[in-house]
Amino acid sequence: MVKNKLKIELFLQNNGKKWDVSDTILSFSIFYLLFSLADVLGSKLNISKDLGFILSSFVAVISLFTILYLQLNRGTGIKNKIETTSKSNSRDFLLGVSSGIVLGIVVLFGVFNNERGFYSLLSIEYLRTYLYPNGIFNMILFFLVFVLAIPIAEEMFFRGFMYPTIEIRFNMIIAAIITSVFSSIFLSGSISFFLLFISGIVFAFLYQKSEAIFSGIVSHMTFNLIITLIIFIKGGS
Image 1 (cartoon, helix red, strand yellow):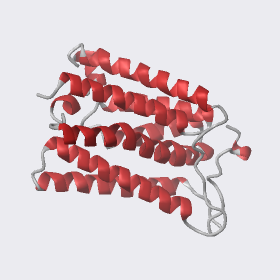
Image 2 (cartoon, one colour; image 1 turned 30 degrees about the vertical axis):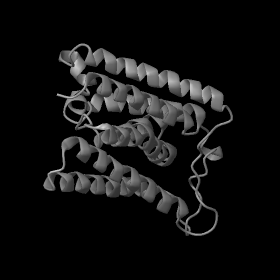
Image 3 (cartoon, one colour; image 1 turned 90 degrees about the vertical axis):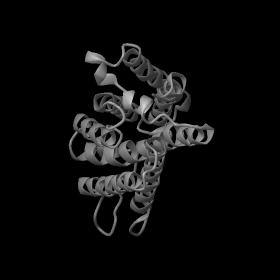
Image 4 (tube, one colour; image 1 turned 180 degrees about the vertical axis):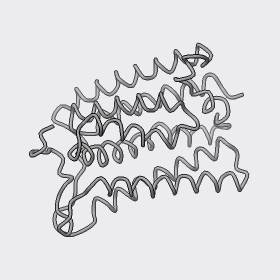
C-alpha cells in the first residue's frame, strides 16, 4: 500500500485534524466498555450463558456500527470512507472462502484431538460446551450474530478503520499485530486467544492484499460458519 496514494480515503480533513491512532484506541475503549457492561448485566440478571453470549455479542455489533457511523460522519466537508470491495471481487471471494476453510480445519484439528496439550491453543471448548445455544430460536440468533453480524462489524472496524490508521503511522506488521490483539480480546473468554489472534493476522493480510474488507468478511464468515457447524453437531455439555 503506497502511503501517499491510499486507496481508502480515511485521512480526510476533520476540522483541520485527521484521524489518528488515538481515535481508534478511544473508539475501541468505548466499544469494549459497552460490551463488558452488557456481559456484567447479563450475569446480574441470571441470564443463561448461551443467551448472555448472544446478547453481549449483539451489543458489541451495535456498538461497533454506532461508533463507526459517528467516526465516518463527524466533522464537515467530504465524509470519511471505508473501502468495502476491490476491483476483483471474484478473486477476493475465493481468497476469503479458502482462507476461512483453512482456519476452520485448524479448529477441527483442535476439537478432534480433545483440545488438550498443543491443541488447547486452538480450543473452542468453552464456546462449544458451555455456550451451546439451546432451542431453535437461540440457534437462529446465534447464527445471525456469530456468522453474519460479527464478521461484518469486526472487519469494518478493525481492518477497515483501525488497520489503515495504524498502518500509515507505523507499518503493516505493527498494524496487523495490534488489530489482531484488539479484535481477539472480547471473544477470548470463549475461544482461544491464540486462535483468534492467528485468524486476525489472516484477515489483516487479506485486507493488505486487496485494500478492501470484502475478502476478510468472507473469510471471517466462513471461519465462524465452520465453528458454528461444529458447535451444532457436537452439541453442548
